[in-house]
Structure formats: C-alpha cells, structure tokens
Length: 418
Ligand code: ADP
Image 1 (cartoon, helix red, strand yellow):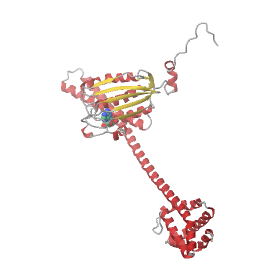
Image 2 (cartoon, helix red, strand yellow; image 1 turned 180 degrees about the vertical axis):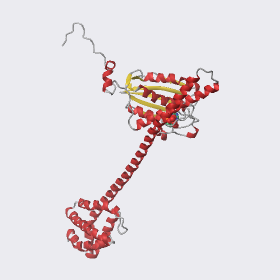
Image 3 (cartoon, helix red, strand yellow; image 1 turned 90 degrees about the horizontal axis):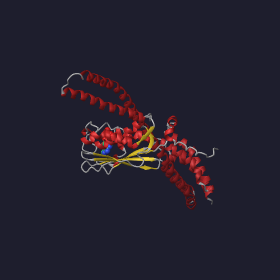
Image 4 (spheres, rainbow, N blue to C red; image 1 turned 90 degrees about the vertical axis):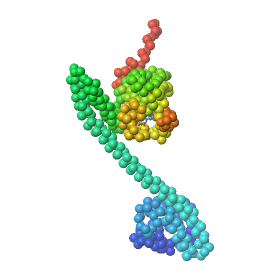
C-alpha cells in the first residue's frame, strides 16, 4: 500500500486524539484542534510532493506562540512539542495499522519530522536571538539615557559654577589692586596667590566640563585657520619649560617631515589637545624622566607621536582612558596638581583631546607595554590629523584663497594669447 494512502488511514484517529494527548487543558485543546488538522494536511502535501517546506507556516506560528503560552499543560519548546507529536504519531500508526504498514508509514514520515526538528530548532534560536538583542537594545538605551543625564548635569553644573567663580575672581583681582599700593607681608602675598591659583584651577575644571558637554552633544564648533603643527608644539615647549625644569625632566621636540607644512585646524583647540597629552606625559613620568615628540607624514595625514618614560598604561585600560572621568589607580592618592608626579585631575583631559581630534577628522590612541610604577615602561600617544589644503568651511576657503592657491604663472612676453 502507498504511504499516502496509509497516512490517510490514520487521519481520523490522529486528528481526534491528538488534541487530548498533546494538550490536557480544555481551552487549549480547542485552539489546538484546528492547528493540528493543518499540521496533518501539510504532512500529507509534504509526503505527496516531497517538498517539506510546506510545514514552515505552521511551525513558525507555533514557534511564536508556544513560548508565550505559560500553560503547564503544554510544552513551551517547539522542539519538545515536535518530539511529542512524533511519539504520538508512531503510537497511532502502531494502534491503527498492521505492523508492516506501520513501519512503512513511520519511515515515510521520518524525513518530514527530521525537517520539522531542524526548522523548529532554527526558529527557536532566531526568536531567542531576537529577544536577547531586544534586551540588549533596551540596556543600551538606558545607558544612553544615563550618559545623557550625566552630560546634562555637567552642562548645568558648569554654567551654574561659572557665575560665582567669575565673581570671586573679580573681587580677588579688585582686592589685589586695592592692596597694590600697600607694603604686603609675604604671608599676605601668599594668601592672595592662593586665591588666584585656586580660582584659576577651578576655572580650568569648569572650562573642561563645558568642553565635555559640547563634545558629548556634538556642539563643538571649530574655528578653522591655517596652522603649523611645529609652531603649536614650540609654543607648548616654551609654556612647559618651567615645570620640566622643576621636575628635572627633558622634553625634546623634533621637527619632522610635515610638521612645518601649513594645514587647517583650530589652533586653540589643537593647542589644548597637545597640552593635555603633554601635561599627562609630564605628570605620569617620575622626576628625571624624558618626554619626546616626533612624528611622520603619511598620505593625507600627519602623525604626531608623544613618548614618555612614565608609569605606562595596562592594555585593558588603553581605550578606557579616553572615556570621561576615567582615572586609573588609587585616585585618593592623586594630588590636584596638573604636573606633579601622578597628580590626578578629574579625568576629562583625554576625553576632550579625543573629541577635538575627532572633530578635526583625526584619531588619537595610546600604546604601552603596561602599567608598572617601578620599571616605568612608558606610554606612546599617537595623534593623527588630516593635512588639509583648504579649510572645510566655504566662506573661510574663499577668504583664505590667496594663501591656499598658488598664483597662476604670468604669460611670457610675446607668447600668444588665446
Ligand atoms: P586626568 O585628569 O586624570 O589626568 P586624563 O583624561 O588626562 O585625566 O587621563 C585619564 C587617565 O589616563 C589618567 O588618570 C591616567 O590614569 C591615564 N594616563 C593619561 N596619560 C598617561 C600617561 N602619559 N602615562 C600614564 N597614564 C596616563
């Protein structure tokens, strides 16, 4: 007898008994009856045509519905449910047909069930992956919201702090002026200097906080002008001479290919980037250490390399330090100075440097064999900046055209004009 005929012979008991066997709860049974009939119909078509994808629609409907049915009466895994269906089908075949026919139809149906198992497994995996990625997305959104509120808080706090600080700074300046005619004792001069240094330090922190909120909200606007990297570096060389001497360090700045070429960038902001990286190099290098600045010209880019003989950075922290408020080690041991050995700041310097470099279309990263305060393996910061022949701003490009375009050669006397 043909397999299809045999299948039709078991249809009635199969359709009648399957809901009771596979779902014991009455309400589920009613729902399931139709679906099981559909499953049987599709088994018939699959057996007749040899195309098993006929099973897909009912399988995917079950794959979506089963995990949501919280009933203990039914298996919530589609793979388990297909297993129950296979056992039930084999039982019905054994009870309805002669043994040889039962074996024949069971082996005929086996490839269909194998196909169902494979598809059920794939569908369940897809659903699980979808659920996990939805959860991840939610976590991501929560983190983004948190980061945004942190950023909002920084912006508000910075602006709120700036007004009273400006007042303190102004009154301190007035006091200094008022006392300038008097002969102050060294103690009184120390007090005035203390106020001045404190307000200056606070101002830098507040300015950094404002910069962070500008960067995080994509509001950093650059004032593109002609810049020369070697000039920026030499300005800093002069600026840092005092601390370098105080810390008995050596700072060597090389003129390297490309460093004397004119490019476009925001000079103040680029100065800030190199200042942040160089003051860190000074800060995290023990007294007597050395810092060197070198670089190279690459096609379309200039790479500045700042190397120190300091405490180094562990590989797992080398990305982290560019996050805001990233400070490594025991922060309670940090002093508040910008250039004393290991004097920690609020952990904003590198985040700002990264924001500025990226706004220029560049990149910043660090390499270091690891952190070791005793052996001091050192760190090497790389700053990659695009070499621009024109400022990105059109108005500025027109204004600076005489600088960026070489004048056309005058025609030779006597040469023919077109
Ligand atoms: P901070 O205000 O703490 O210096 P930064 O953003 O400038 O903040 O730096 C973040 C952290 O990266 C620092 O706290 C320090 O742990 C590490 N770091 C930065 N530069 C160096 C360096 N040259 N050598 C060793 N560690 C460094």
